[in-house]
Image (tube, rainbow, N blue to C red; front, side, top):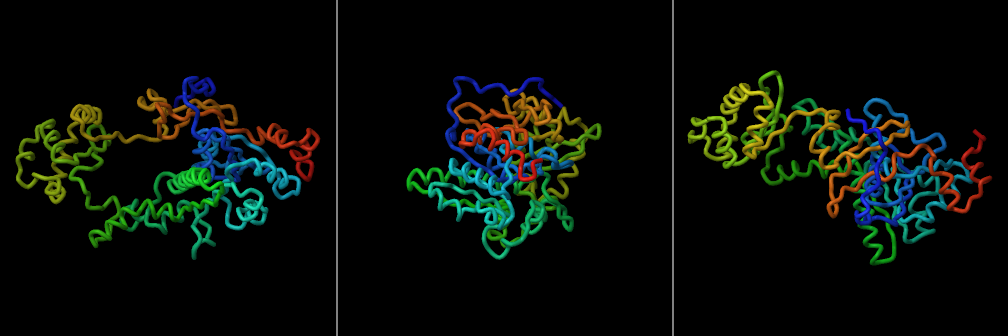
Length: 405
């Protein structure tokens, strides 16, 4: 794995100002969904201040599959540590919120209300405030339930579509958490645009379950259009004749696709499949889809004669879709990501040097990059409290907490 020895470099001097520069976001978030929303806005230039308990966001301490959550979704942010259950801590939080354009949170229903930091309370103090709430469900019969990404994948049809028949399987990433946070950010930016017209803020709500429904909507609409239920992806009737993982020479695997009649002609010519190209049963893509039962064993046999590298070279030379089967850790050395700046150097809170994937977009020729490393716990507490008017003695008391520890 590539581990650069230097911290993030400054953005090029000729780079344009980031679109959310001058916007302040105060987030009360943890895990993935809420932090993703803040990360998107932070990457786009907003000043995002993460409010953590004095003991720190528990996401910092996760192991296993959660070990990368904090470092991935909390770059470009500042950290302030406050005891929100104390009067002094809550007062500091309210002072901070008073300076914000956007507040974002993703705690379970009722938590922010108990703290007096819910939208109904805060909008009385600032009618221009935009409040982004990330929950398991939008308001309705399910909104009292505790949701997780895996929960909504199971109840929302995604696990059914991902796994083999009778074996529902969650997707291999926190897809609803990440996309739910992205939709929260989209809503926040839309609310900013609307505030420019009306002068007033609003509450934006994003939810895991509804996000999951958006992801499987294409399968719902397949049923609406055809009257036939979508089959799980491993057993579906493919829309394309060749759209498969092939086992090839040397025990390797590779994904190969031939999705049009033009590509079929190129494919057959490249591999000398004269008899298949001339077969009247295989003239169109739909013909070949219907013929997959007997056609695919023939193609698998022919492809198995080649290595993955050989097949990649032929497919690339002819403009045909292909993909090696890559593990996440191998992407640190992906030549395209390295050449195009898709990975940025970053220093982790423990001092380790690494690289991190950037948002998958360019603006005016630039990738929004890493300006601030993931913050240490309370790294910016002193400077932010100073800005809010606290003196050194008051800051010391707030940092110490009610027990003096």
